[in-house]
Image (cartoon, rainbow, N blue to C red; front, side, top):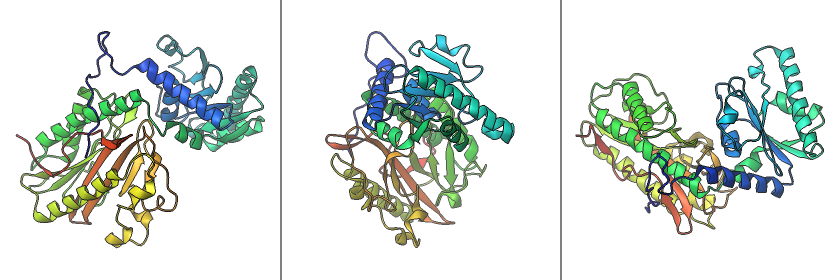
Length: 412
């Protein structure tokens, strides 16, 4: 495996060196979004959900309910940000690159009732149409992404030509800029602090929830922008992928794997799995599982290169029948490669379920996570997941925690 170039800086900003350039990050993403709209002959995005709104505006917002804030992002001209109550009075001073601000309309997942929700959706659609008219694009196509059916129907009822924005957004975001790739590297570097803390704390008698909580706190201290739930699965629960956060007591000799996902830096997400053996060297069966897994993922990653396709890489995943399954859908998200960034499970997707008959082409600048597992239900197993960036020379690893063998915990 080849490793991507390491970052030469941390999360702090200095005038004496070049780090992640946040202004360039925003402007290059917006340029890609505008090009995507023009390529699809669409006048604007109307986008909700944090992965979309952050990509288009560089802003954050409340995420405890869907579509509490959103943006109208035209192919020509400045975006209009409709932000949530409480944020709107204070945010404009923090984000001078956004020139137009409005109050967002929301109906709280229809909690106020159907009649009120429909009335609020009508107000929402009326305000969007007014903005489109002011920009002279009221008769053109609007790519809507991240909204519920009530919002989309209200827009249509207002006479707006609505098209599905997800395929356009996924196409726009499938390759990453230099700063996006470096944000991912930073997120994975912060997560390595979580792995080290888990390596220190995993021992007989430890609780899975306590170890995962301390591990996620370590990632936050290392620079991750928020603390997700770090999942640990151990012993008989370590295959295939079921309950986590059970409060299970770790036993001597347990296999334990962590799924440290959604650790973010500037919104860019990790998807990162590693396996430990508690208190002793893993037995021969576990070592055999793990060596098969490493070889398999190595082969998948080796096939990820410009001009190749997801079919080439998926051919290295075993068929579902190898584990006694009847169809490939029984392995969905278990033996897979998937795009990572602000979007998890963005383009491209690598698996036998879809890729062999519907391949996607690999391109320079794509970032993916590749994962698999081995084991026996009710007895235990192992997992591994790596992140890669596609360069002219093929796929290079972004993550750097040891992957070639199962580490014995605790460390030290």
